[in-house]
Length: 327
Image 1 (cartoon, rainbow, N blue to C red):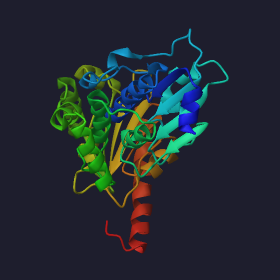
Image 2 (image 1 turned 180 degrees about the horizontal axis):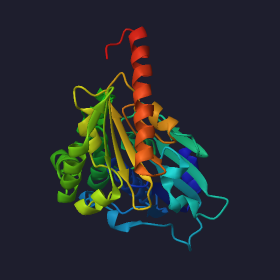
Image 3 (image 1 turned 60 degrees about the vertical axis):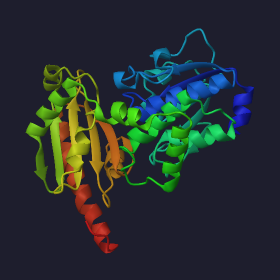
Image 4 (image 1 turned 90 degrees about the vertical axis):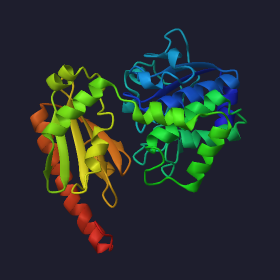
């Protein structure tokens, strides 16, 4: 059905999620290149700017903040978006009825909002799914496409270190390297390089972290974000550090935004599941990596997150104990 839909299309809008990560930008640019191989008119859109560390990817200079108002799109391809809200204003402002939606994603919490849903929760990244789709569509994996796909694989698996990485994941990575992608380059730019403002934010967050009843968390005010010169709405890895602490079952980072809302990132290790927590709070994601957005004030959001996480830790630990799984 995917091939049939694209064969009938002419103008395609490709959207990824707000506050994009490596898998989002890798997927967006890979799909853009693939559709141009099929001679389609393509517009790439993301509500937020492409993070500078991914500017090495082909077509990032052509990513718009809004769809072209002069174009009537036949098809919308949403990549790495678990629900419609993740597409942000770029989707909200489309004229009704919206075009035919192809939803390509790997989040277990995906709401299947598309007319065609290609959802593979077992995949480590959306780019892993795209690699298979490109083969079905006879897309040539050029060095530029390989670089986009490998960026998604490397960043979403933290360098192939997360739960769920399979032999097939590594096989795809090897094939992408054979197609011209530089694994060392992607690892350096996608995982290792940090802006000074990020390190300043981490310093603030680590100085305020608290551990209670299995939850290690920190809450950062908008003023502290501004003082650090930090502009992103995610902690760019700080929550991963908290979840890696031996004494913690879950890690959480809350960041107050300029409008008073609070962005929350969750991470954990098996057998715990932060997707359950995020979904309860109106968000979503993966069992080991999820997030949500809450209304302020920060102190109230913090209290809600702490209580919800700690209750989930007790509940999930009891469940694991019944199943004979060590925690």
